[in-house]
Structure formats: C-alpha cells, structure tokens
Image (tube, rainbow, N blue to C red; front, side, top):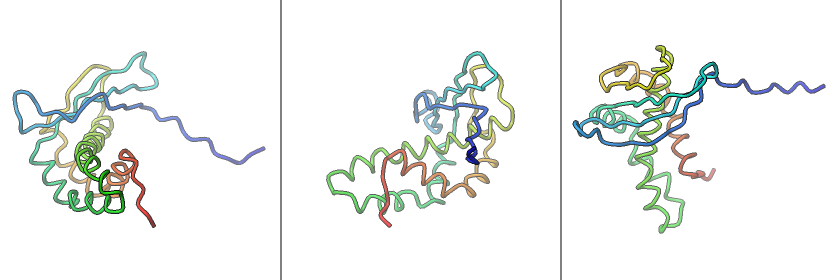
Length: 150
C-alpha cells in the first residue's frame, strides 16, 4: 500500500470570469469578477473584487513590479517581450484581486452575487500582500508561461 498523501480538495473553487476592468462610473477603481463555488453550494456565484488605482500603485511600487517584469523577460527573444510586457500588468492585477477574494472568503462570503468594494479589506490586503510577494510574482510568471533560467 502506498504512503502517498492525496491532495486535499479545496473548499472553494475560484475562477477568473473577467477583468481587470475600469469601473464605469469611477475610473479610480479597477475590478475583476470571479466565479466562486463552495463544495456545499448547489451553484456558484459571481463576486466582483474592487481595488483602488491608488492601492494598486502602492503595491506595484512596493514590488518594483515594472522593473521585475522587464528583468523577467530579458532572456526571451526580443520579438516576444512586448506581448509579455503588455499582458503582465493585467495578470498582476488579477492576482492581487484573487488575494483580496481569499480575504473576503475568510471574512465569510454568502451564496449570492456580490461586490467587495474598494474601501473594504484595504489594510488586510496590504498586510497579506507584503507576505505574499513571492507567491504573487510566481503566479504572474506561471500565467505568462515564463520560466526563469537558473
């Protein structure tokens, strides 16, 4: 008999539906919409995660995101770099929104379509992001399908 441990099935399944998008009535807000399904629910819900442009700018600056992304594509053929440099910022925002979605789930999410407003969980997101910088950057690389040579 094998001693291999089977992976635990996550309680929630979260899938990006679309985004990031600028809020129609307030361009200082960016949002992503996720489909969220809890195992015990019969169906999933859509959750819009809003983040202010100001908070995203602070996070980008803390990460040194633009310089990091440029350094991450230097080993790629020059003709491919532009596409990665264009897609990278959107994927970064998606990952930040995903972290905020996890915070919303921890706070208790109902089985209904909802919005997590830009001014909710701001401090908590800043604190978690400070701890998850490596995870976020790895997820961006994975989504872009970029491998950094050793």
